[in-house]
Image (cartoon, rainbow, N blue to C red; front, side, top):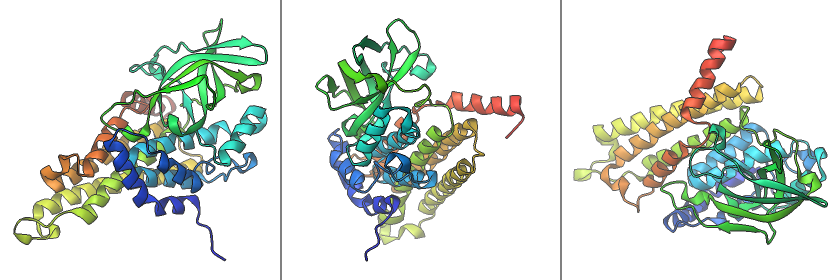
Length: 370
């Protein structure tokens, strides 16, 4: 009997195809929907959903492994997968809270698509920094009507469900509503025209009085950025981007002037060695953070700091790989430049650098622990 591969191994087998499809999509500023179908068929959609909710309930280490692998092949798609892994594991942790949760979990586990959270409505000033969220949920018989436009709807073309933040009319407090996106009153507008993470397809989505049932109102805190899981998955994504760029140096450096092999040129060895040192740091940080998360000893502040430190070291690794290739690396036809652009844009993923540093400092100075 043929043994079925676990989702992380199945995703690894798809790496070459994901890389190829991602390159085409990035060049055309398109969304790699065929890659999404490959990932769903490989079990990625159901991987983070608890077994009690109809999914596979994979361990955090396996989920981070998935996002690292996808990120190495197509960083923009890696961000889409990261958002799904972050939110699915939280939102569906207890589907007994709501019939709407249970139904959505079953549909996603069966292959309907991914899930994410939609909050931002401004191009700058994220809600985490006090950016206004003007979305409204209007009470009607049997449920609510959602009226809003959300920006940065990462992977919106791959989502079958989303958790939408809105305030009930008459309140200033934000609530979360679970919304099926297969309604005529949900409209996607292509606005994602950016320098990096182009394949994340983070277009705008408009809700024109979209109806959701009463039980679609979720308990508070399900999509909060508090806690260590959010930033740990993003650190895994950055690690994957660094791995993808580094792989180019191990397999694609050209023969040098006079026919010398790359290993025989001190300058090239220097750049590759610096990249390898930075990548060792990335791997050590992520592997240790995953271990500590599973042991429940990783704090939210430490995880945010790991995300920051991984991004810094990943940036060094990617930059040194580009130097090893020389000027050829900056051409649009060269694979390296996509890793460089995508990682740079990823620096804006919440929490920001100053927030991560401040949070760690508070833990050290207030709690005396580190």
